[in-house]
Length: 242
Image 1 (cartoon, one colour):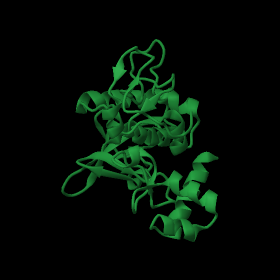
Image 2 (cartoon, helix red, strand yellow; image 1 turned 60 degrees about the vertical axis):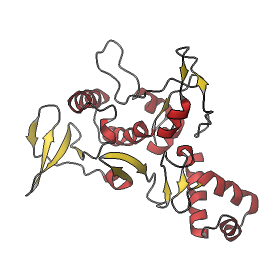
Image 3 (cartoon, helix red, strand yellow; image 1 turned 180 degrees about the horizontal axis):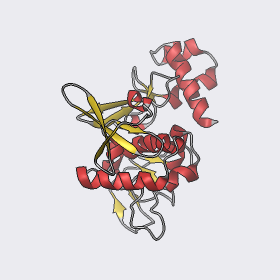
Image 4 (cartoon, one colour; image 1 turned 90 degrees about the horizontal axis):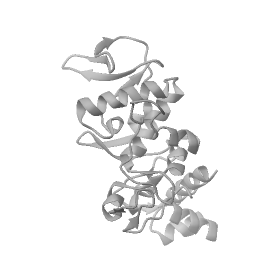
């Protein structure tokens, strides 16, 4: 399966033998594991493991997708895609998947959220624990999620918060890579495909036009955009195709 997923408005799940409402699903975005792997710079197998419960364990997966597999391939909504970025960051800083599962379970139960890592809660880690930043009128404090105790360790400041736009504390838009600041992923536009923020033009459309024409200025003129934005679209598509 390619990094993108072509979805019709109604598809039948072969996994459960039930019909899913894909017309509603596409409004939340539908992304395959291969695309999430590109966005997290992890392997497909590593990302897929975050959506599986550990055998002989009562813990749920680190990330939950409400979608049934498509042609045997795991797919996820936009909020799970955002969560995968945070789980990837936690893993890169040394947290075990078991710890992340425990934290995710507690957050889901405590806050009644299916995708707790896609909220505006500011998470921190010292490589062993995941903490939540709590702010009052005077200062910010860190709360160890598992123990509910205040923590004062040397922590990692995740820059990922700068790449996510929140509305009412829920992620609605993501800037995948800092080197392409005008490329966004927003499930409300272009069926959730990566687009250029100005004009909401799919990056693949611009990149394909450039490959056919070989002229940034010409493509920019065709789509009423700028050569710089076409260049960002091309660079983004080349990066995720590598």
